[in-house]
Amino acid sequence: MNDVVVVGGGPAGFTAAIYAARYKLNTLLITQDIGGQIAQSHKICNYPGFSDIDGVSLSNKMLQHVKDLDVPVAFETVNGVEKTENGFIVKTATNSYETKKVIFTGGTEHRHLGIPGEKEFAGKGVSYCATCDAAFFRDKKIAVIGGGDAAVKAALLLADFGEKVYVIYRKDHFFRAEPAWIELVEQNDKIEILFNEEITEIKGESIVTAVHLKNKDEDLAVDGVFVEIGVQPKLEFLDNLALEKNEGYIKVDSHQVTNVPGFFGAGDITNPVLKQIITAASQGAVAAYSAYNELTKER
Ligand code: NDP
Image 1: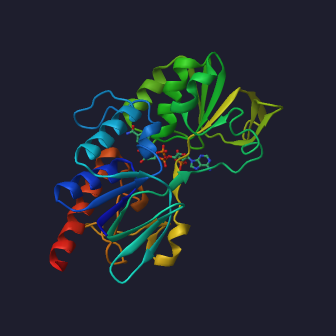
Image 2: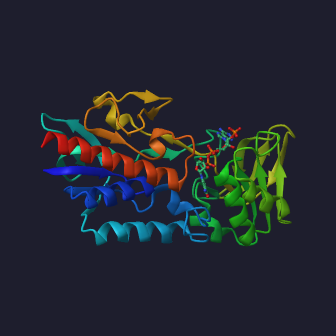
Image 3: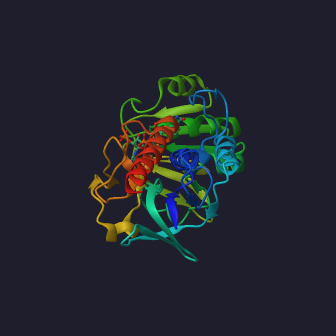
């Protein structure tokens, strides 16, 4: 029986595992990948102590920190959590783990445009990860869809490889992205911003050749389309717990406590005001502290 099972290996999960281990809780971390969303970030400049690091390197440092504290890490996908008399059973395809407390930090998926061509050309010019795929688009024309941090950062990375990058954003100015990134995008000669524009179709034959612009009502020739329109919660597999939600995200209080006793939420899946590494890490720390407090009282 574990004291705590932490689900998810992003900043929230890693931090929760580090804090839980240092509270001397018998802790297990289960994750299907290393880093979660940040693994797809090619440049992180705003996490204190790290003014220029890529997401994979930072994720690996966090994972190493967890391992240095002798926390076992199971690289598996959690597909269910069951409430028991004494706590929970966390299930993966191959294992069931008993635990008194769960700190859940996973569960978002990429948002899709849902337009013709998106599915058909996935992996054939349509990508959801600039960090992973930018190098395939050397000297190519590329469209980036979206106007948040992810979109502007993807545009900057893609401009290092491609011949031309179009950022296609449905609003008339950027307001979600960090001003420091916006400035770099605006100064980059290879990047052209199309405000007040959306795409209604991704066209091609065996690979992408164009996108159709809704307002201009014309095709724009591109070789690649990076869909950078954020993430959405994926929590259906926890429906049996009857977690209280807020716009589809897990509802937590300031102690990361959910409506299900012993089940804590942290990171993006709780829809924090600011979805950043530092806020995810902070929530992970608080969740571990709350789990520790409950366990101490129950002993
Ligand atoms: P965001 O939710 O911030 O932005 C999503 C963007 O996609 C918005 O501009 C939105 O438009 C647009 N969009 C959403 N749905 C559609 C659609 N169907 N069609 C066209 N456009 C659409 O997501 P991000 O992935 O950019 O960022 C997620 C979080 O992660 C944010 O909080 C961000 O700050 C953080 N982040 C931080 C990074 C960092 O380096 N610090 C890097 C990457 C992300 P609209 O504005 O009109 O709603």
